[in-house]
Length: 214
Image (cartoon, rainbow, N blue to C red; front, side, top):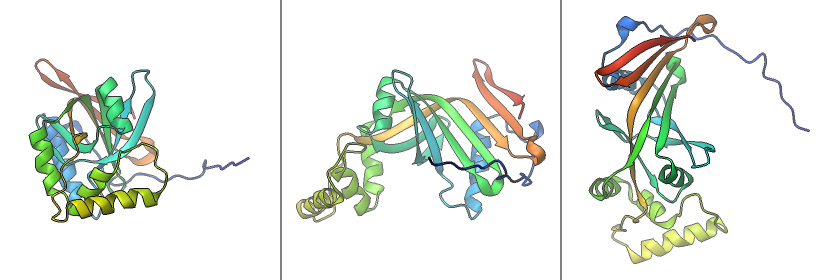
């Protein structure tokens, strides 16, 4: 039997506070402020977020993705649509992103419905990726079983031979998703676990802001 006890593993959160007066009425602007600060810190992969999805039966799955773009229309990442997250979203197009910046004692959640990006945007971003990443995307059927790493590397080598000018085409099943938010939550860790939490909820007349218990 394997067993571990982490009851005594803890620390206090002393980085700052968050009040209603600090918040912009627009949660996307507030998100931008927090993201800009995170990017200005020595935080590795500040744009990384946990993406939670669930299939048609309600079974959840979660993984880390990299945010590539956001604006008033939503939050975008790219992946293989044949992956587990792609299959989940095809069955149940609702998801949530969670950002965690330990150095700032901050957590940020964004939830909403997800849509598939058009091919024009997928093509444009695919061409921006480093050549190695393009070959990798074309060689992999993400989340599917593969016999060995040697098989994967052989696929990449074959693509490099067939497309020596680094013009490997974007796979038809590789592309982007946009989460259209209807809820945000901004969490600031505080001393003695009396955290500051504020939720933005979409309403017909704008965004409602509420303080939540920690």
